[in-house]
Image (cartoon, rainbow, N blue to C red; front, side):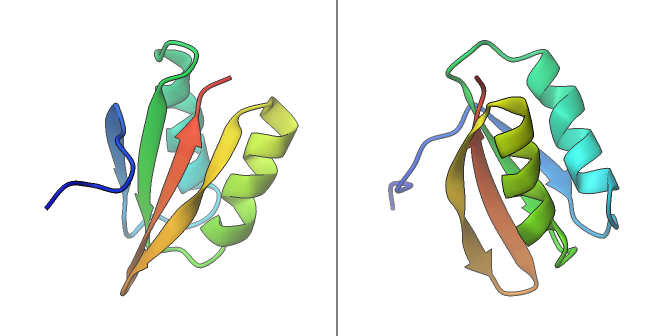
Length: 79
């Protein structure tokens, strides 16, 4: 089954609590080229607030999230 949205890297932040998922995302985005997409997997419910806020502050494109049960997948396009 094809993915609805492709991504370049996947970051596993499952089990990590705020602010660690966003810090891991920020670190990985530094090594990516503009326009590439990161998929962040997180179980911390605060990531639903933190990830869009981080993207707005840093100028990255927040492409949305997908609920996968206990885990949520967030897609972010590097500015």
